[in-house]
Length: 220
Image 1 (cartoon, helix red, strand yellow):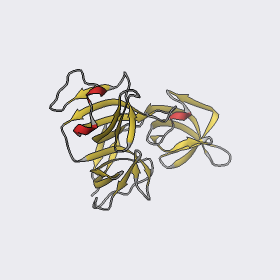
Image 2 (cartoon, one colour):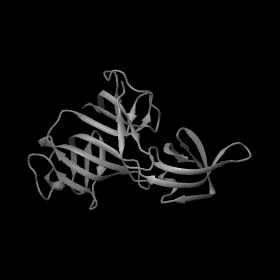
Image 3 (cartoon, helix red, strand yellow):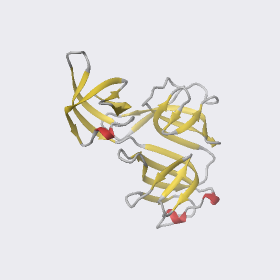
Image 4 (tube, one colour):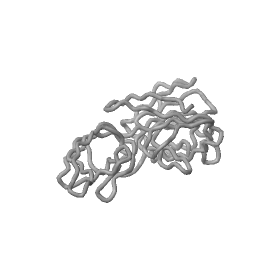
């Protein structure tokens, strides 16, 4: 079975496409560990049913870490800690992070010291959640021309009060939205204010099995 983890690993089990899967000491893990069984992670799982009817994983192959994208105005930067904060999320930047300046400044050797929250710097940050520390780690940081629009792409954390990739979302003005489930990958567009992303559109992101690419289908 190939699909997305829809509930984090805990107490010897996780959810795959909404179904509980047990992990045993005999389960073979390829390219990852149980700590990486986080919502949104793509995996390929070979399973069998035990005598009690439980679905048990024989082999789990990790395809990719869940990619998260945050676009919005920089709220804070800490050059000592190596972090940027956007939409309330603190994201770590290290030597492996690709830094690009696509704004009018077009700084060639762009780094954290070039950022200033007082300048309303607008960023697009691609990140993943480190399975060991739980920190958000940036793979790419791009400074772009200013926009009042904010976006987040990631997995649904909660449904009742919608939270996507750790960002609280208000969908009251988003029109018709698709039926959502925890662990599903979505793209939310809107404006960020008072610790809330006020959505104008919510779209489901279709991730091709085993691939990094994705397609966006509209909510209407």
